Image 1 (cartoon, rainbow, N blue to C red):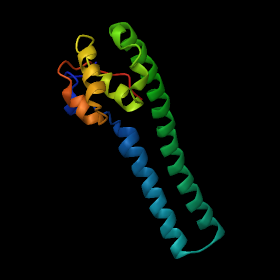
Image 2 (image 1 turned 135 degrees about the vertical axis):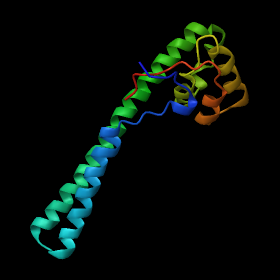
Image 3 (image 1 turned 120 degrees about the vertical axis):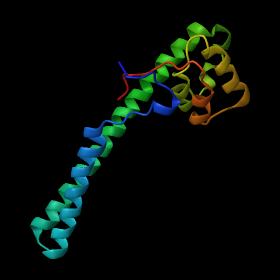
Length: 144
C-alpha cells in the first residue's frame, strides 16, 4: 500500500531500478560503444554498438508491450465497471476512447457516472483534464 493517498499529483509510477538504473546503464553502454567505434573501427566495435542499440530497443519495447497489455485490461475492466454502474449509458460506452477509459479508472464508483456523462457530453479527450476533474480518487497500485 502507498505511504500516502494516491492523487493526480502523485499517481505516476516510476520504478527507479528500471527507469533510472537500467536505462542509465544502457545509455552508458551505448555511449561507450560509440566511443569505442570512433576510436577503433573494427568488427568488434560495430557489433558492440549494434548490441547496445538492440538492448535499448529491447528495454523500450518490453515497457511498451507491458503498457499495451495493461491498457487493454484497463479498457475491459472499465467497460465492465461502467456497464454495472451506468446502465443508462450502456449504448454509449463504446464511444469512449481507450485514453478516456484509462483516465476514468481513477474515479470512485460514486463519481464515475456523472464524470463519464460529462466526458461524453463535452467530448473531453485529454487524459489530464479528465484526471484533474476527479474529486474522489480511486488508487491504482497494480500498474505495470
